[in-house]
Image (tube, rainbow over all chains, first blue to last red):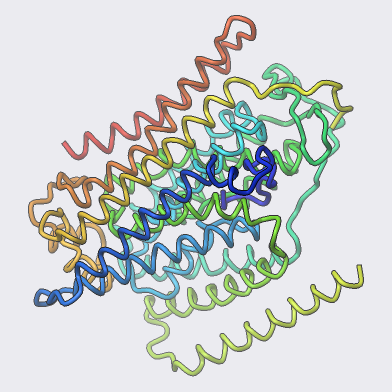
Length: 387
Length: 144
C-alpha cells in the first residue's frame, strides 16, 4: 500500500459497497483488519504482562524491555503505514534511512528489514487494487522480470560489499543513502514528476505485440477507459536499474517505479501507482532471498513491523478521504531531510572522519528542519485557502 | 489515453484471482508472524536466537554471521531457524512469498481460460511464479 503515489479511494477499498456503518464494519476489509489488530494488541499487551518482573540474563536485555520495544515497533509500523499511504511516500523509504541514521544496527540487517516491510506492504495493497479492478497485471508481470533480476543482483551486491568493506562499507552505504534521501525529499517536495493522463502518440511494435492493455473502470471518471501504453522495452530496462537500487539499499521502490511507468511507458498515474505495488509484491521475494539465506532477516525485529504494515496499509486507505494529506506529506519530507543529516553524521563517524559530534548540534539541526517544515505547512495551508 | 468505452468492463479473472489470493495470504502470514512473536518472547529459550541476547547483539552493530556465531545456540549455518518462536516468524514471511507464487499460478490459469486465451501472459505468470518458488526453495535449501 505504502509504496505508491496514489492509493485506492474509499469506494475502491471496499467502503462504497456498504451503506450502513455497522454493516461496513462487518465486511472486508474491516473484519480481517480489526481481527488482526485485536490479536496483535492482545499479543503485545500480553507480552508486556507476561514478561513484567523477569530478570535479564547477564549481558542480555530484560524481556520486559524487549516486549515494550516490540510493541513500539508494531505501533511504529502501523503509524508509518497509515502515514505512508496518506502522504503517498513509501514505507520502505522511511524505515531503512531512519534505522540506518539513528540506530547502530548493521546495514545489511536494516536493508533486509526494509525489504520485508516493502514486500508485505506491496502484497496487501496489490491485493486490494487488483481485486477491485485498478492496475494491470500484464504490465506488472512484464516489469517484474527486470525488477526482480535487478533486485536480486542488488541484494547480492549489498551482502558482498558489506562483507568485503567492513566498517568502511557501513559508512559508505550511509553517506550514499543520505545523498539519495536528500534527492528523494527534494523530488517529493517539488511534487514529483507526474502526468495524470499521459498522452501516447506512438506505440512501438514490441509493445503492440504484447497487447498489454485492456479497458478498465475508472471510478473517478465513472466510466470505462481504454489505456494505451508504449516503450515496454525501455520500461523493462528501467525496472532492472530500479530493482538494483531497491535491492542494494533495501528500499521499496514505488518512488521510482511510478514515474518510470508514467513517463516512459505512458501509464495513467493512478494505474501506475497500483502497478508499482504489484511489481514490488511479485519482485521482492526474489530480492529478499539472498538476505534470508544470509540470515540477515532478524525475525523478531521484522515481525511487528510486518503486522503493523498489513493493518496500517488497509487502515490508511480507509482514512485517506478524511485527512489532509498535504500537511502529512510535508511533515514526512521534513523527516526525510533530518534523516539524511543523521545518515551523513553516522556515516562519517563510521568512516572515522568525524570522531565526536556534540548532541546540541543534533538538536539545533532538528529545530531548523522543524521550523522549515512548519513554515512550509503554513504556506501550503494558505495556498489551499486562497485557491 | 484514447476515448473511453461505453460499457462497464468486468475485472479480468486473472486480476481478481491474483488479488484475492495475495490479499488472503498476506493476512494469513501476518497472523502466523504475530503468533511467532508471542512464542519468541514468551519462551525465549525456544528460539534459534534468544531475544535477550539478540537485541544486545543488534545494538552492538554486529552483522548476521557474528550474531549467529555468538547468539545462535543450535543454529545451523543458514538463516533458517528450526525453533517454534523465530522459526514460525520465518514461516510467516515465506508464506507471504508463497502466496505471491500461488496467486501467479491462479492468474496463469485465468489467462488460459477458453474464451480469452492468452498463452504468452500465462507463460510469463508461470515464469514469475517459478522465480518466486525458486527464491523460497533457495532459502529452504540453505536451511536444510
